[in-house]
Length: 376
Image (cartoon, rainbow, N blue to C red; front, side):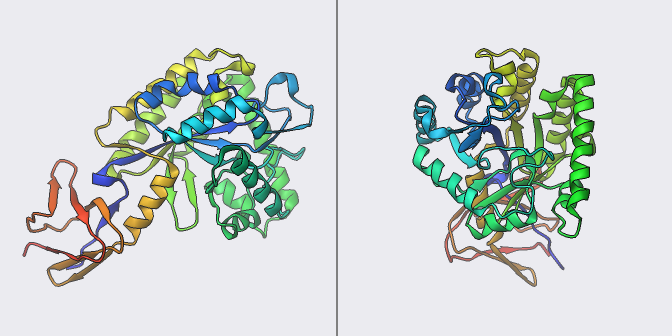
């Protein structure tokens, strides 16, 4: 009989929950981050901050209105109070740092700074060095601004030892296809921007568009995220955001699929007001966190923890010979959980969760085989 094992990434069958917040930069006030995430940290969530090393003062909501269109650059290192704050949060394990591009520049054609076919390896390395100098961290993960990155720059990231965290949709596949002419990609970008601007102006839902739960897939050299449904791309209200969250929880709870809550701290501080002004959106954010927090199988995790755990799980060797199943790992894996339709013989090394149909091996020690048997 052929036995299929569905490997669960989280320890003891828990569902990985990540928070990714974009756009921390020179202008960020620590009080803004604290106001959005203090309660989340109290509840044990970890926040992966996508930090812009060398913010360009562009006409975008990621910089204060007083400096938009200045076109000057501002290194994160020069905001000493913010750097001190971030270092402290890193030290206590409340945050991890992701590299968010270089300057967050968006061209007149609407493309992000890594979206075109120009080789941006130099900027990638320079930004990485800036974060290292400012925060004493070696950034491992890279988030392209605007979710826009070409195939060429994706490959450059991987060659440089960085792990890209990129959106994976049909639109992204189209934009990364090297056989699609540049002028068609520019046209697609303009049409999308026009549609989004029209929708945001009519419904005032820009904030809702930038807060969402997404599905995470971990590969050997990259991490991708995708929308739970086509409706996720066009949220029109707070109610639709909360409805999407409920749907994601229901679907992902079955397979314990990793979920990332994408957020932008400055959304809650309209035009960079020092106090929270978008109270309706902030309340929705708190409801989303509460919905995940109350799950008994929630694993609050960083990208690095998930990435390293996934490599361990994927490298477990499972071999079936007759009714005998052999499991072996080169590294120590705690709480390895899986689902299988086969009925297994009781074992002191296994625990069974009949409600969720999950089987867990508490400890898989390096190079020590674990033998299981299928009931005849």
